[in-house]
Image 1 (cartoon, rainbow, N blue to C red):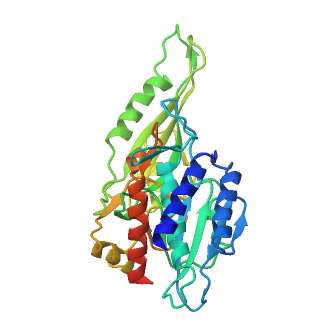
Image 2: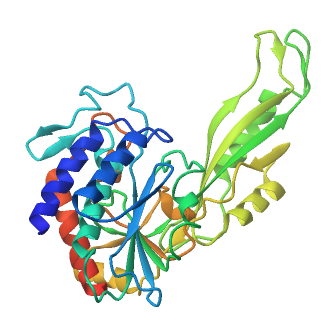
Image 3: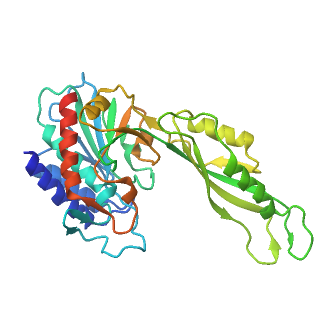
Length: 353
């Protein structure tokens, strides 16, 4: 059965690659995922472009384990030398947009869910959500499904981790900041040039350190990623706009980070766009983590964001593929990684379920 499911999963991944599915435009790949469930005689539901279902013998008295990965992709960058929408196999490599992030994870979890679907005596219920809008953190992704699906007690989020155990993940807060000065003609003296005022502000962001360091996730990382000011060569602008990207460890809430920056940053103003993408973690002693360690998997903290950020329950990020390949030109995944991923998922869950 596992061999057949693995073959089916790889075939589905090839179809997903060849079907464009940018965030909020995942309708066609949702149909492909629906067809997976139809082919395997599993009833399913769909909300917007999210496709979901639960195990055949769902029991309200049992805790529920969520299996989740996404089927949307970023847009291909200009560095591609291969057709991003063609599933190209060269040896063990399967090329194509979304192959690594996160198509390989999604099809591996679909195969794993299908393997356990008809089991009668599971310790956990299983719910699977093939979600949309992960790449854009959009309003119609996994976050929109949480009021719809059964209450979740623990989750496996499929993202490329080389099948190692990401037991914690940094949160994200994006800030819009302003540095003000006095507008003037460039020909006249101006001791309050907003652009020059920004030099000390940038230095502050470069050097500021948050006090609390995480054993798993390390320091909070703060980076100025955008700067914008001025419209013409002979006019000094009255303000400079900055965008600041803050990756938050598990020692702070996003709200705490926002309060610290409001109090301490030398900006004229600084406002968070959203506080909802918090850090996430699972206890190292959780039985899912123990099951992975027993299979020789290593634990680590992940600096990249995923749909874990919208979950309030313990969650483990785990999947085939390598995060460093995500969003790169000529994205690929090894077929053997998918085979290994399905095998490890099933072996892990056999210890828990």
